[in-house]
Amino acid sequence: MLSTLMVASTLIAQQLSVTTLSNPKIKYTRPAKSYVVLKRGNIEAVVVDNAAVNDAILPLHRAGYSGVAKLTHKTRGENLFVPGYAGLNFEHILDGTIPSDRKTQFEPRNHPMELRVINKHAVELYQSPTFLHSLESCQRYELLPDGTVQLTIEVAARKPSFRYSYIGLFWASYIQQPESLDIHFRGENSSWIRGITPTHGILSTHRSISDARNFPHDEPFPLTLVHSFSKHRYSEPWYFGVNHGLAFVQIFRAKDEVRITQSPSGGGTGNPAWDFQFYVSNFEPNHIYQFAMRAVYLPYTSPEQVEKATRKHREALNPIGTKSLH
Image 1 (cartoon, helix red, strand yellow):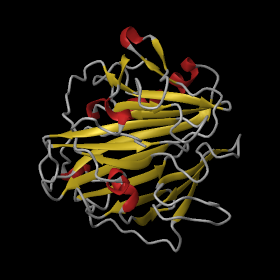
Image 2: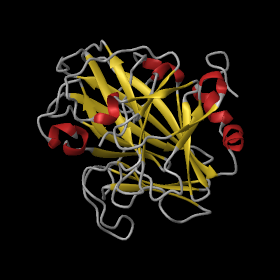
Image 3: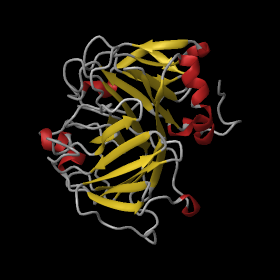
Image 4: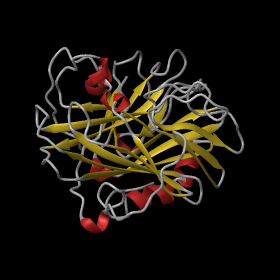
């Protein structure tokens, strides 16, 4: 199942280096277990590599599901994400060709990851050049003072192994039994859009109002979520869904041209997937590309309340003057 695609726009400059991929001088330690528990503000987040875990913290956690295995708010102790799966989970590396099997289809799940502890609020998931596409990556998960998760992603293709000269990257978040499977975002003319997809892989991906890019791909492409576009376009690079009185908000940089993707059943019946995709167009081998997003988990009363509560984070990723913000 696809979780998210990345469209790269920024060749990383040295002063913008964030992770141990671009800055090997950053010090880190290796934890004894395959996960690290982060706590800050009202939030507890358990970041896990792609190994299986079965203990009191992560019972029956399945191999392959890296990222945030557990996310809780002090007002609700139950995991936002489907137990055994994860959120902000790196799932696919895409070049437009049809994967030969499920191992290559879910390449990030099946290549070893290294968990690196930066400090008590930040950890990284490092992945050496992968077995098929030779993509090296490092993902930093950091809890900001208010409990917001900042995810900074740096990637480099170590070989020209992408057939159509672009890199597609996909992240997924599997949501546990929300009352509504739908997502919400600002559409054209700034109206609120309720994103609904009738079934997995149908009308699943929402592009920005300025996204005219075309990424060629072989047909029939099996990852139907990726290229099945909805009739909606978003005008602001963020969206949210609601689960038991709490909103899960995903905020992006406009310049990264993220594609928002959803499935009503990605995590099983009643468990939607609220995903995103990035792309690197005409990539250069060995150049490091960077993307950044934030995930906010907070009590929900209305779309306007969520919009107001997340304004500082949206402005941090999209400074005033680069994109209009409500």
